[in-house]
Length: 291
Image (cartoon, rainbow, N blue to C red; front, side, top):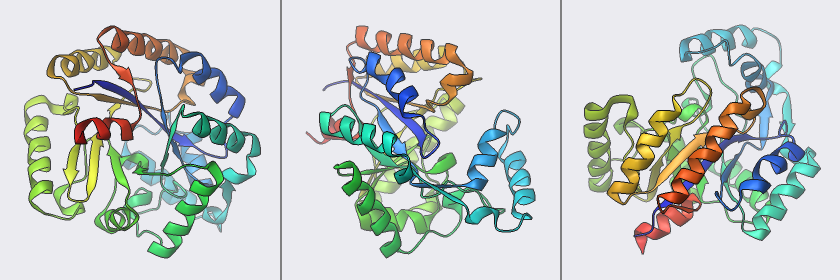
């Protein structure tokens, strides 16, 4: 079975600098075929949190910060549409046509609420969600098959919409049992995740596609400032020995304030190549399992 290394790049939105994105990826497309996770309409709440993310280390700190923002009148009504960033949309469409990237949906606004992260609140209606998804597919000339939940958190009502839209899930660990539809395949997958988490703790990743009924699940490994790169290399070698694949999760904007992270990523990708991993998207990982 082929071994594939995939990259999950979250928070591609109106604020993304297309020239910077191009400069980061064009030199390494021979090493990686990233899945770019797009948020179509980021809100001001999201941006305020991102500006302070180096100071807000825990979920509790983030939500306390957000509660203060919500006291400001109409702050969550401001939207930044990715469609207004025409150069970025042109670049993404070009890459999709060339087959260099895959696109995933990364929430709708990424706005946190006083109760939690975006996908911990109630989702839009299926009709509204489907229009947003279809419009993005049409604009980029590609079919979207994956959903990346902001902050790796999602509740059951969002999972129902993913099922209706035929979207699969990329997640750090995976949804909790009560956050998804329970069936034999889901219970089997989640029990395997639980056993691995108990035995390996925060380093747990199964490095293979799992099933949540009609929704496929891939687990990703965070690669961000403050993370130990050595842990990622260990996981990479584990996947190489077990015959599995691997998904590395990052935010390309983080390379601006942590340039050493980009250099480490390149080294990681070169190491993967030497171990026999092929660059591929989430869908290509899933196709290898199915075939």
